Length: 340
Image (cartoon, rainbow, N blue to C red; front, side):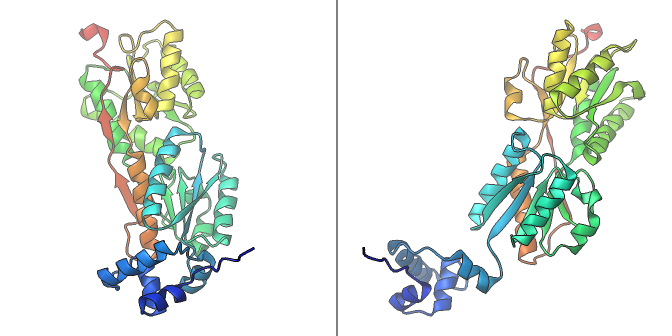
């Protein structure tokens, strides 16, 4: 059987009559190589079926061109949107992405982060993390750059990319108040920590600006999932003066609220207006389509990757990047009955 010799950088350099280092730079699209020479080298490499050795390159550059991404739950539609942006941005820069699921368990998340570090990934992105507050000593000792995406706790030990929670929730609550609602409920997430606190702060600020007295009984906590939101809405609807509108921590909570309202014979939005947060793909196809605050999920993933790559290259980068949300008004909100 004929043995096919693997083409090397040295072979390409000899054919192109350039140095080995020039070939290496050209294959990385380095601006240090003039355009004509770079195009010739890449053409020769492509025609010869050249495939770089990742192991050899990592020995020289001290980098593996890999990024570790830790997610809470791969089945979460928000996570899927974010990871899509991460993968696109990483691929553009020649990086591979390794994905691991933490199941929202802090101890497991810590183990996965440590495992990525031991495998010598160049950097790590952790989505919806609790690691920021629970494992600060670990973060300060890590030699691998880390970016937290929508982290639930602030941390000086890591960079972060996050949605402007307070600004987005303020817009959502203001929308309901301007429709004429005076009894506006909030279904939060008892596991949301910092993000829940910020979204509740935006909700409170909107009520204050509209002259609506804050009623603690109208603020309840679910679990960020439909099941928890159903129980939370049930609690709100059993009040002596139930809300005419509810702002939900996320779209999954709003989905549960829609089902609970219908189970109790209420119409959305005629009897109860509902607003979510995220703008998941399914939100526009609910019945009725959901008014929500859009998180640019793919863009946030791209920003997290760009931030991480700057850290890998030891370039200056903002400690916290906040991305504005956008209120998307659909058919799940309307004026309360008494004002129609």
